[in-house]
Length: 187
Image (cartoon, rainbow, N blue to C red; front, side, top):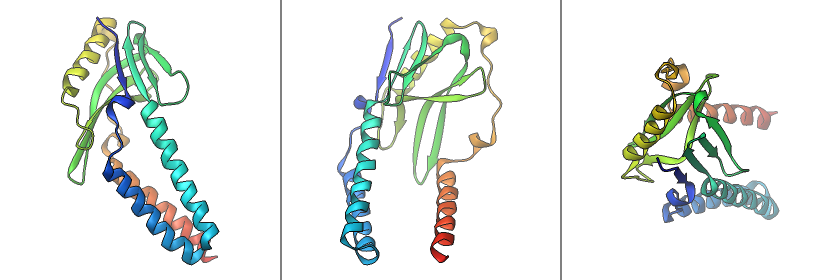
């Protein structure tokens, strides 16, 4: 079988809608910062936002996954990546997360120690559609099935984090950050 490579730069393309969201965030920050922090504070805030956005885009575009005879290698944009041997991979499936009218499907692998890893560059969403996602998933699964014994393939038990959506997690984190910010601000 041929080695499979899924690269972020082939999948993720910044769009005008992403740029519009960034500009809206900068505008809101601008009004808030100039009012509360002054022009220097605004420049620090805007510079930090642009730096973090650029770093996030750079890491996302550099992410990749490779499926080959030695196992699955994943790299999240920094370094050479990490290879997980076939004998350490217990299960491979697709996780679909739905929220606010759109859905995202990602291939993930479950390791012998109970950890799970998603494969960067191999996903399907409304924002980044991949017409051949199912075919690519089956190719990865075929590699795994041909490289492992049937007794080593064990479907993991579903945990709480499998039931919580990304949106719910984001709301909880936002509430926690807002609560901490309110406590610090009101002191």
